[in-house]
Amino acid sequence: MKVDLEKESNNIAKVEIEIPAKDGVDAYNKAVKRYANYVNIPGFRKGKAPRNIIERNVGVDRIKNEALEILLPEVFRNVISENKLDVISQPTVEKYEFEVGKDIKLSAKIELRPEVKLETYKDMTVDVEEFKQEKDAFDKSLENLLMQSAKLELVVDRPTKSDDIIVFDFDGYSNGEKIEHGDAKNYTLDLAHSSFIPGFAEQLVDRKLGEEFEINVTFPETYHEKKLAGQPATFKCKINEIKTKVLPELNDEFAQKVGPFKTVDDLKADIKSYLDKQEETTNKQNADKAIFEKVIENAEVEISDSMIERESNSLLEEYKQKLTAQGFTWEQAVDTQGLDNIMEKIREDAKFRIKNSLVIDKIASLENLKVEPADFDEKMETLAGMYQMDRETFTKYMFKNPGMLNSLSQQVLNEKVMKFLSENNKVNFVKAKK
Image (cartoon, rainbow, N blue to C red; front, side, top):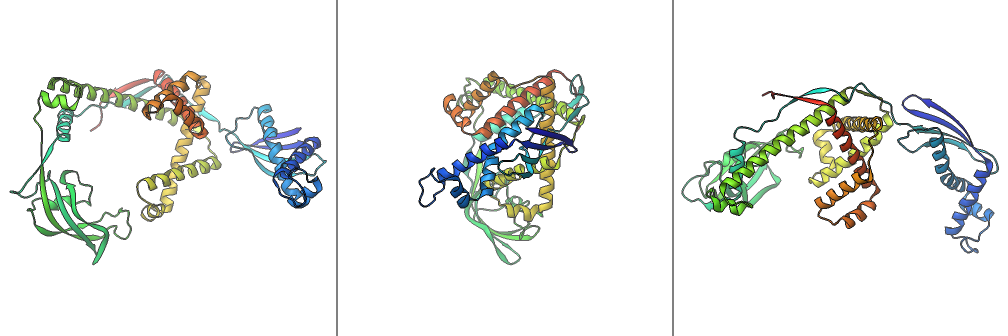
């Protein structure tokens, strides 16, 4: 086999290949046999039709294409191996000449992994704003815990307050038309934690039990339903019930109900320990992020348009799946955000993700960081526990999804690289800006 390889710009290798006639004939005959085994030809049992009959019924060009499908994977493997090419996608055949009995000539392009230039990635000192819990973090945590165990009591002798829970009817109109899905009966709403239109819950405060009234609001300009975005609306409301939250007494009995604690002091100690660990974890995450951002900032990578296109398509599919999971459609997203804005954001995210991945792989190569079987086993064990599956069942599930296995392997490598960067760079924690 004769190979002429030339590296072009944008990380592309152009290769001219001449495949010996014998190899072409062997592949062609194998292709004929394949078609003979599954194509129904009147008068012949499967696998018994002669070559000329197969060619007449199937077509020589289709047989040649099948022959190339048989031949080319091994051809490209040899070209890549012998020339020590670091490829990132399947080679693309641009043209070929295939006449049975003669050498096959073909031209192909192979996309290579972009060269990553790292100015520095270790022995750096990086400033990181230190995360500190708010002074009232402990009190708020304790209050939230009490709130989770609060009981609701009906109120009949006063108007609604901003921290009440109400049960009410509402019926909405905008520009003289009834709002689709803009009405409900006996709807329960926590006035302190409302996800309604801004200004809606506030107008439900200081209302009496049984009171009927109207409130006026304006839909946000970014509202997902384009017809209502930025439009004024009126809602007819009626208060059916008013409920107030009654907190339990903070005592040993309460502590024993909410966890494995004997006393209130045990509970408070646990909350403090949790907040301390959260502070420590947040600072570690911020430090790792700052170090990696510094490495990325110092890295130079030439990313081809084809790489960006492939990653953008992948991100677009992820985005559409997220929309569906949230109850929105692609058409609604385009209406509210605009197709150009969405695609520009996806393209930027694609470039960011590609650069991150290439830099991680480069550092792994320079420092000889590899995913060892023990690393992989440990990750599988952890994930099996997270998904509450036994190890054997989880392993079988993963091996049925090669894409997930590859993703998991890359995740393990990412973690090893991040650990290396953390251990080989210094962090200087500075006071956070207000």
